[in-house]
Image 1: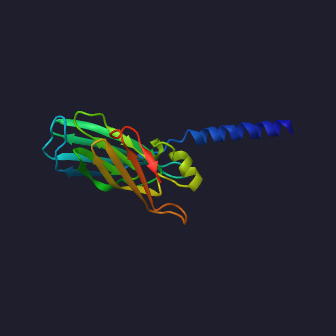
Image 2: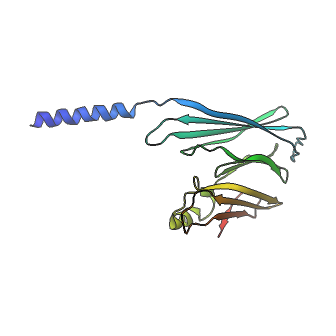
Image 3: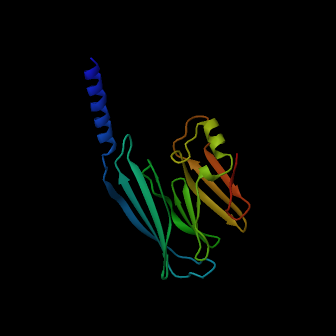
Amino acid sequence: MKMIMVKVLVSSLIFSGAACMVDFARTLESSQRVTVQGTTVGTVVSETILVEEQIYREESFPDPRYERIYHVQAGNQRVELGRYTDEAANGMTIPPQIVDRWLVVMSGAHIFFWQPDADVRHFHPYVADDWVDYAQERQLNGHYDYVVTTVRIDGMEWQIIYDCTACLTGQPARLRFVSVDGGQTFRMVP
């Protein structure tokens, strides 16, 4: 009896180890390039700005995972804005736009802000003060239920508005985040 149990245990360990070593293929799901006309501060970029989005799909269990990679090209400068991975298949929710001389790229619940001579800023609800507690109390899923719909920048005062795409009864239809330090930190305004 002990011999059988040991064999079963060893067999199950080998099987589970083999299952963990399965390497799922990553494939390019979609790729798009969007041009934006406008001017940004710093090294002035008055020509067309090109934003490139690539979405890769990787099969995984239980759900596939999607990685999005964003680049911006202005003149001779090409910069990776950022990348993130989750289980949602969506990409850019609104075409990129210039807002108060910042290039703003909105992808699901993520936003990237770019100027030629500034560090890229990346915002999503989980970096805002008190978001985690607020979301847990109301059973919100910021990366999947809400998408960016509006970005306003007025000097040091920034505002980001999210609208719900699949909310349950009792969940807010709109979320608003504000920054008073030029987009360095954000807090949620209920």
